[in-house]
Image 1 (tube, rainbow, N blue to C red):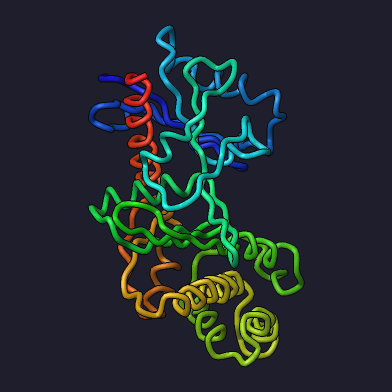
Image 2 (image 1 turned 90 degrees about the vertical axis):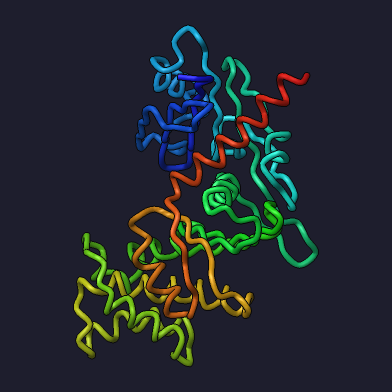
Length: 306
């Protein structure tokens, strides 16, 4: 290993750590658990992190760089959310040392704070910068689907603007906490035809997304929509609404980078093609590691220059 370091993506629901060769960027080992921040008390963060990484760090105390909700007010230590425009150098300048955790660092987040719009993110900013680097692009629109989907506009290698849409969280709420989602609570496979129906209805219904969601029930009762297909239908409605809104906000858009987990690739690709957009898919883990590694490298350079 050459200049090894540890990158940690620590969110509300999951902990993921990666042992990285600092020179080549190669991932040498990885581990993951469901011990996200919400499953631990604040006084347990340091102990849990140390226990997970102790065999990697050993006596060398390898540097640990953490991103995500670990840097929020509900996390280990709050780091600033920096104003856009923002690049990896700007993020590196906002990195903060973790108290009582030798050579541990937490990356900042990003924000939009304007007269007409206020938005925040933690973790997606490094993912977006990493995706730009992988794609070899400085100017692009990026869609980062998830619990809180982010649409990010980049130019000149910097993040210029972004919009958050609560697609994933709303899907979970509708599916597991409403009458409409009752038939969809069991595990089910993705059904492209039911998903396509959801896309059609959110675009064609005079009642928009609110009526299209209810049709998940009425079509099951009266129009032959199978109960196991309701989950895909609801997903089509909500993802369709997300993309419809962003298409309206960016009418000249033709192509974008789709940065996400494999399980979201098929539905988002289908919905983007439906809206006349051409996606280029990049794995979210790969993008996060590329972005975090670049920030870590820049931060190490800043430390050496002090």
